[in-house]
Image (spheres, rainbow, N blue to C red):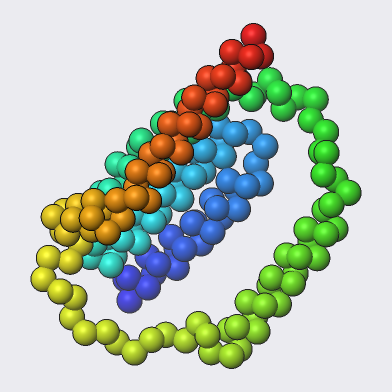
Length: 169
């Protein structure tokens, strides 16, 4: 019963902060809402008895990635750029609303068809599942290319921010 209560409360907080990430105009506030969302995910991992993954969630995402995001936000100085804000895509809001309603209708149809039904109980997890050794082996053998691609993408994003900042000055 306690797990269900934790899930419901943190699920509501995660959904609310996820919406706030997109809804708020201040990028620093948006980044802070994302940090709260990452901590909610870490608690979900704790409830699932994946302690190592929860620690990785906090260290990697809430720590390193958010420090990178805040660095980019401060480097671009977007705070001053938001003052004379004019929405260039204002005429497309109705299209976005229509497409969003279509997506909700598709999700409702999928739920009615039983697509989201809970699977049958799986067997016991293999020995060492979620341990640092298993995570490292999986990350650096099976998922080595995506791991390196993401690191190069983050590096290129940081270089792009520096170039954009220098060009503006």
